[in-house]
Image 1 (cartoon, helix red, strand yellow):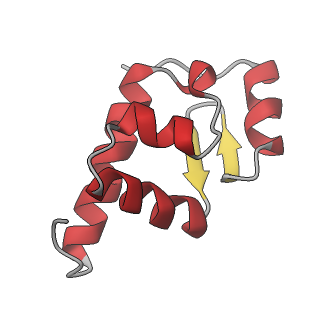
Image 2 (image 1 turned 90 degrees about the horizontal axis):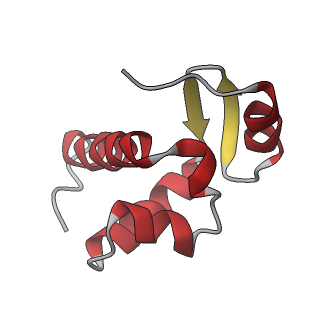
Length: 85
């Protein structure tokens, strides 16, 4: 199970330009972030590297959330008929 964010972590997430909103156990990213993340992912960047390229603080999120986010964005692209890269 994914850990909940601390209040300090939530404040950092809410101040991040890549985040639409955040609550203790859920993050919603901006559409621009998701689109650029997908571009980097299609270029062969791992989820961790794509987050880094987009100036996102990976320490707050953690490895499990990065993996889950990568999979959610990939599945959403397939569902929207953008297909795989």
